[in-house]
Length: 330
Ligand code: IPE
Ligand code: IPE
Ligand code: MG
Ligand code: MG
Ligand code: MG
Image: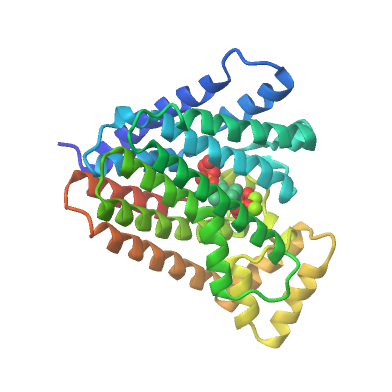
């Protein structure tokens, strides 16, 4: 018998291939090209497919049939891709998944439309789901999307706000990122026929996983490199985003370092040397260490949520999936 991790790796690989194949088929035979070429470009990009995989794992964990999940799984991945296309315009980023962003390769108008189209296709896919709980699924999907918009709005508003505290930050990332993982897990559990308690536990698990995921994302922005993450290096710093690292550093640095950091950020043209200095300041102030332990705390909370479920292979898979995300470098 393979250890769970290897068995899970094979299963996820198979599911991911299925998602990759099904997701591009949504544009098959559609016109005009000016809409569907950029959409196809986005959908063939090398995404990790974390949200649909989570939906499938949640369905599996409640003993449901995976076959009933594909349209909803494709829908949550489409929804995620819609948010990325518009997010890249908002964040003025040039690179995503190791390629030029849509507004760079085409232009902002094409990119707005591509995002709109992907969102419409997401609903179209979700509505193909044959399940008596479809009205509930559509409700969760829609409320989740509203929260993502609110989270993205807060993210934008925080760029020009002096000080943001940790609670406000957690609320913002909860909405812009954790909510989409939360709804994916809940939808999988609902399609799989899970009980209210199971749907809640899986939703909470995914929410905590999502908080950890966004704090990691904030750290990778400055600690990793463009080739590894496939995204513009230091984008958050250039955009003056209130990330975990910045919020921690501004509230824990001594006066000299705090002023140096604010000085670096107030520059209208932040260069590579500035980014390296910001990174060093984050390290020296202990913000990187704090971020690492914040990720661990949310991962531990997610593990406690899993303990609400019956023990079994489904629960073990989710645990291994959580560990794999905890270890991620992209
Ligand atoms: C990026 O999500 C957006 C965030 C919520 C941080 P992913 O890191 O899951 O992006 P892909 O789909 O794998 O490219
Ligand atoms: C992503 O936040 C949130 C959404 C796309 C909704 P980021 O702006 O940090 O994501 P990346 O780093 O561009 O992938
Ligand atoms: Mg972004
Ligand atoms: Mg953003
Ligand atoms: Mg980011």
